[in-house]
Length: 115
Length: 112
Figure: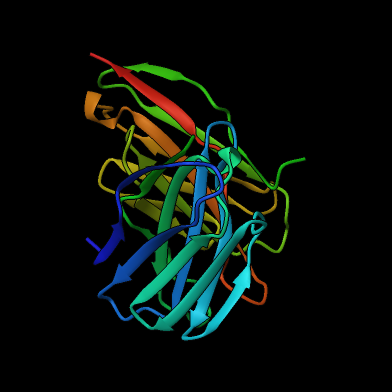
């Protein structure tokens, strides 16, 4: 299994509070991704990173920020959590490919509930 | 039209039968295709990758790709109750980064 650790695994918090989710990898892969998964929507990309300090937005980035100060760590921050951000969050990693893309491998997920 | 479409199911098959899961995609320049299996409450797990037209077999799994029809499928032979899960189709499209678009998944139920 790919060495990906997400923390925390579960979190319950209140509307308006800041929340930070952590993704840690031991594979030294270049690309890291944050997704959220909701019923009826599947996996949707929030933000991704293609190197240290190199990040960009995905399709549902509003209300989220990210940081990557080291190859192995990718943080997702909800500056002021809202109930619509209640979801399961997955981190994924992939190595850069030449010609053919390398598939993504997923962490175990974080179940976040915002009351 | 969604970029990647899958029938949500559930698809019910008896144990030992062949399960056929289908996925269509809208972007003709899509280049790489993946099937993930996701058990309830767990993370997606890669089970197949396919990059060129035709069939690719791995054990009981066969992925089929037809780029002209923009169609990719997954066949599971000798289905087992342990195959009961949601299967996600993922499609890679060239862009400034490694963009992968996921379908919403097909739930498979294998009946003993």
